[in-house]
Image (tube, rainbow, N blue to C red; front, top):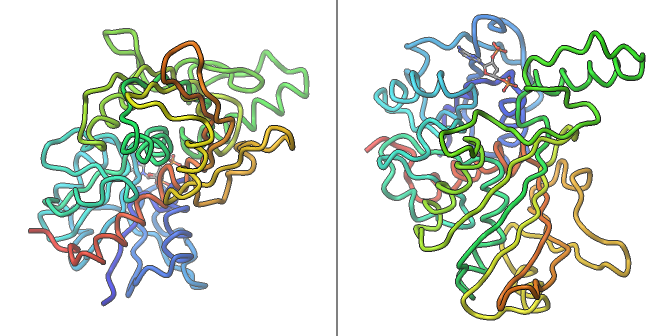
Length: 341
Ligand code: A2P
């Protein structure tokens, strides 16, 4: 079987990665349809060595399309994902719009693939920071039952899209030209060059940001378990690609650092890089262009009875977005679920 696949937002940072990932993993594509706004309609993208013309996204775009991967922002997903599903096209959506909707599974294939079985046409891809946290925490939760998570993120600029990456480049140039006066943050709230911003997305009434609360709600939904607390701080750092996280957990059952290392080295999608004596630990520059989620700096937290600290890195455009979406699509194929019930 092979499928007519659309990528909505095909010219964006995640959309381009989606095309690359479909190609690299040899997803059964009979025809690829790259969609974007009128701004870039008519431009070309490459797929399997061939140039394909980008088309403008319209209400009629989904006729004859089996599967669409969306990454064109929340507003586009809100309007077009239901239209696509209504015309029989299964949607894997990377925006936050449908993630907490009861009718939409929120899936990380290593963690809760069975949730795909009840999809009704729209499947949500979780937030990048949530994905790379739940991949290694799932086997720990199964073995020792997590009772609390405290997480601080160090998130790359690519999470804000191509415009955010371009903004950092411009600012770095301006800094090196001693031209601080010209720096004009547009996509990010303040200067990101040589800085850290403890704000990603908007602030909510509880003074947490929307990005932080995504990590709370999405983790509970993916695990199908809200018995534990999640306490997040999300920070944008001047890294182009690759999110990092400092994660502290408490568990019901004791797990030593050695046991955790052994468990994670068997876990799907996880690679343990943890040898302090040799200065081996994950870093975003090593995680870029890799599929795995890297875990290191695993150590016991002796300030509580059963605590562990760890450091997690992943390519936020890949496992955090495009790869996870394509893995969802692969799992749909495997389960014969590329159809709207
Ligand atoms: P375009 O290139 O036409 O602006 P990023 O996250 O890197 O900023 O990319 C966003 C992606 O979403 C781009 O491919 C962009 O296309 C696309 N996009 C943004 N707004 C719309 C829209 N209203 N309709 C269709 N595609 C859109």
